[in-house]
Image 1: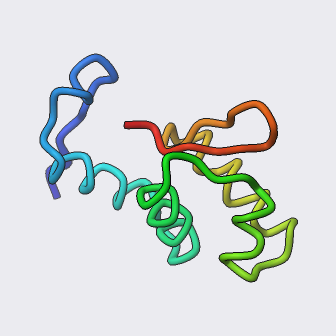
Image 2: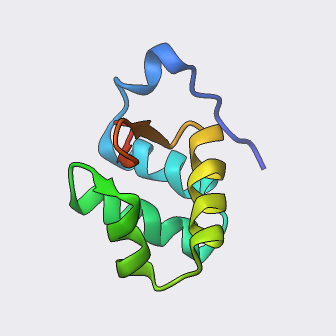
Length: 86
């Protein structure tokens, strides 16, 4: 399978479809995709609202958020809020 490499400087010039493909490749689990979908629908979300929406254990959500942050999909904001990197 031939996976195109997208450098950080050209990532923003890609179409929405390319961006969604990039996100789907980085979000391997259903829980990760749920987090991304919630953040796509909102400008940002607090960790407390994510707990409420996802109905997962706080430790599980913290792990998901950390994984997505390491992959460059989301960004942590002050006040324990998270946003999707666009």
